[in-house]
Length: 63
Image (cartoon, rainbow, N blue to C red; front, top):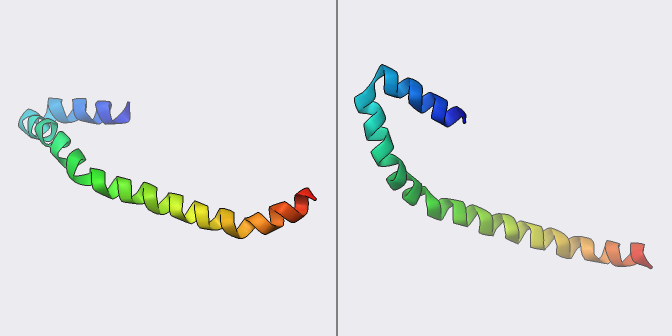
């Protein structure tokens, strides 16, 4: 909602810049997509490693 409000303010104050931003937004999103995917993979890997380290403690706690 805040992004929409900021876009509307930009549209009122400087409409050519707002139109350029509107056209470049999908391109920037596509460029940043691989970095988001790498972040998800790295986060999942760290969670897997943490789960492997905590597994013996969970097994001993369950017994």
